[in-house]
Image 1 (tube, protein in one colour):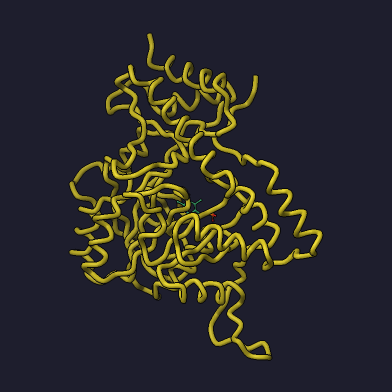
Image 2: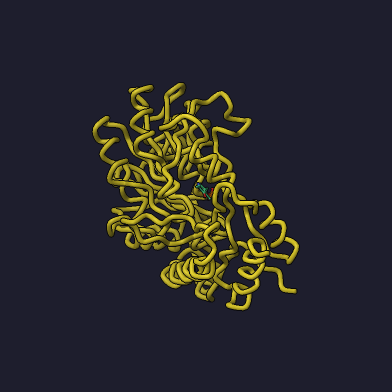
Length: 374
Ligand SMILES: *Cc1c(COP(=O)(O)O)cnc(C)c1O
């Protein structure tokens, strides 16, 4: 039986042409015409003034944290329900993350909990919003809270390239935004990332820091610590080819989500991940939760699918439950089981590979449905 995967790269051919050009012109370095063009093309796609192409989304987040002025012992607010890559860069700078609970109708950072965090820690150095699984966070509220407190906003849009909120692309709301092109994201370069910023100077500063922070002097001179975070010209070629097909990827992801939603509509115990009512989702991963008190557990569904060679993934385990972050504070609106932990316990990510066929979808759906029957 065919193995069905969660999400894998989908290449189209143009990627290889851009790589070929790089070989023919010997631009096998972390700069070059593909890098310059990819930076312009991504900026133009999302509507940002400029972008810096980097070696990963994590590298982009690290530079965003530095550019936001986050220093040792500073507080940074970010959602608990996310991938560890959101928080690690905060820790690279020896700042202290404070985790914020999720809101049930988006799974993203709850603005009410964010307000509460400001009461507890009035002067954080930055706020980071994450658009989980391609669903936009509540940017109206989050932006206005940050503005009110005059705190820089970083957007981790690693999973949400192409997702808009009120017609504006996620990643472009904050002072800094990042995208990822890791192997299973909506477009991929095998690995890579982008930093965008409200101010073009910040993008230039990111490029400077990403090239070992070499001063514009004749000799190798350095006044600050730098990083080797540039994207290679080969990788950027893959990105350019992928970007030509992003709309097609998004439409296929949206179709997968709708297919699951319809297929499970008559099972009251299943709920699909909520989409932001003000957003257009890229539906990077389709997720489901089983209702509280259901006799079917996510583990049971994942095991049944695994038994048929079908790959799933648990929901990200909240950061406030991670051993490495056990000393960090967590802010939730109401006492008791947090929303983020509840989603984690009741949810799973369904196969969302855009190459999956209708036959594959039927196989997945039939196995999931079988768990709730009889
Ligand atoms: C993938 C991801 C990242 C990291 O991106 P890389 O390119 O893998 O470094 C950061 N945050 C979130 C939420 C992600 O899903």
